[in-house]
Length: 136
Image 1 (cartoon, rainbow, N blue to C red):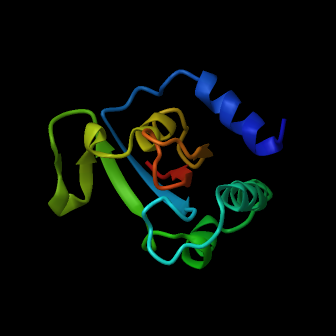
Image 2 (image 1 turned 90 degrees about the vertical axis):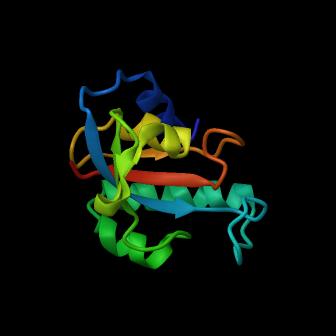
């Protein structure tokens, strides 16, 4: 099993942290067919790049700089999520149920300043792999 898959499996086994609201930053590694324009990498290439970036981050790499350089979403990729109500878009806070399912599933399992990966899944994470850092 690759280090990336081991990391994902270990994180999936964790209980969610108690918090009504969290803030995360993410780095999206998409693949062609995921609905993100201009992306040409295969699913296998996206997984390999995710593993490489995760290793760099866990080795002390600057998360924000890597987001800026590599994300297939907009930098800075910071979102608040809440389990209470519908969120507050003026404050960039979204209802957990309004986000990609894997995004919240990983975000609530992380401690503040910890990084985890939401793997590609056709329904839970359809845009690709999300490397997520919990900020608050």
